[in-house]
Image 1 (cartoon, rainbow, N blue to C red):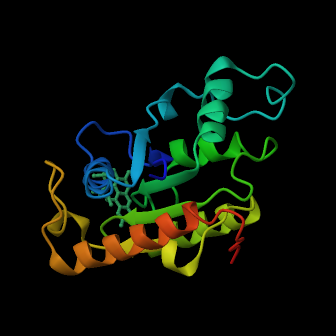
Image 2 (cartoon, rainbow, N blue to C red):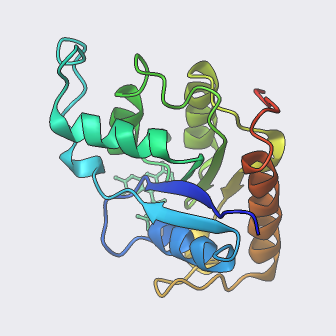
Length: 185
Ligand SMILES: Cc1cc2nc3c(=O)[nH]c(=O)nc-3n(C[C@H](O)[C@H](O)[C@H](O)COP(=O)(O)O)c2cc1C
């Protein structure tokens, strides 16, 4: 039996009642036979990114985040769009990985689940590409009108959305299981 792949899930929303967090929970449940999903809980504990603190002894919260990324076979990001861009806490977390390169060649799935979402998604795709993430055309997706598609108790209630996210997770799993194949787009 092949070992389950380890995925670190990062939610771009810091709300306790978050549809993106619900989506992560739903995806973790759907893929639980193949993937062990751990949800990163430290985005709010990361200090504001400052290149002067990004030295040989970075803040402990940063060390912990980088370790969790290194231990993961892949990263799943589910995020809303804020003010047509990427939520600041999520961008801040990613900025802490630019010099240390934890995302380099790392299989990544990105879902922007929002009211609209395309502009924030596009910006985050640019960031993920420049830091060398292994993300493919099949492992990123925008889900607009998220409030009509996912519930706060972790249910995907729209059949088209269910089909899109399961397709995406299948592609992500393939990427996780074939990590020598580099799919930078
Ligand atoms: C400060 C703020 C800005 C927002 N800006 C946008 C936006 O630009 N585009 C969009 O699609 N939704 C925007 N929204 C709405 C979010 O998409 C919506 O609240 C979504 O459910 C948030 O995801 P969450 O439930 O995981 O927190 C914004 C919400 C907040 C709180």
